[in-house]
Image (cartoon, rainbow over all chains, first blue to last red; front, side, top):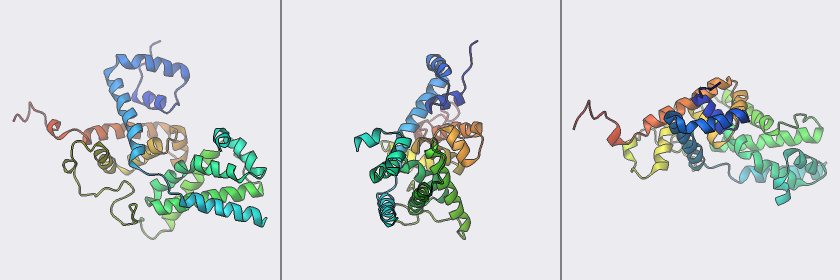
Length: 76
Length: 200
C-alpha cells in the first residue's frame, strides 16, 4: 500500500518521531513530491536558523545552582 | 569532563549520588536550554526565565537529596514540566502580564528583541537573520511558542504536547501554520504582488 504522506509526517520525521519504516518510505518519496520537498526545505531552514536568533541562559544560573549544591552538600 | 559528557542522565545521577558534583553540573549544562526555554515562552523575560531555571534545579537537587525523585528515565521531560509550571505560577501571581525585556533589561518587545512597529521593508535584503526574527515576532503567540519549543529547545512534539497540554496533532498543526505564515511574511517585496493582476 502506498501511503500519501502529509506535512505532519514530515514534521514528525524531522523530530525523529516517525517509525523507522515510515521514515524510510517518506525519505524515498520526498523527491517525487515538489510540495513535500519544499516543505522539508522550509522546516530544515527553520530548525537551522531559529537557534541562531536567541541566546540561551547566561552563566549566572549555573553558577548559583552549583554554589547552592556545594553549600548544601557541605552542610549536610 | 569528556567522560561525563558522554554519560547518560542515569549514569550522571549515580555519579552525583556517589559524591561527584561535576556530574550534577553536567546535567545542568545538558538540560538548561530546554528548561530555560520552557519558562521563557511563558514569562517572556529572560531574567525571570533564568531565575526559574535556577529554582527548577534547586528543587530537583532537594528531591534527589531526600530520595523523592522517581522519574529516572524521563529526566528532561520532568525538569521541563517543573520549569513550565513554575513559570505559569509566576504569571498567575503577577498582577499583570509581565513586561518583556531585551538583553539590557529594557522593555521593548520581547526576547526576540524586535520593535513591534518595524516592517519587513525596513530590513536590508541580505539581513536574513533580522528578517526571520521579525517574521517570528509576527506569529500568533501559540504558533511562536511551538517554533521556539521545537526549533530552539529541540523538544519532540510528544514532549511539547505533554508540556503545554495540547494534543500532538494540534502541535503539528501549529508548526505547519508557522511554516506557512513565515513563508507569507518573508516573501521578497518584489514578489509580493501578482504581476498579472497588478502589472507595472
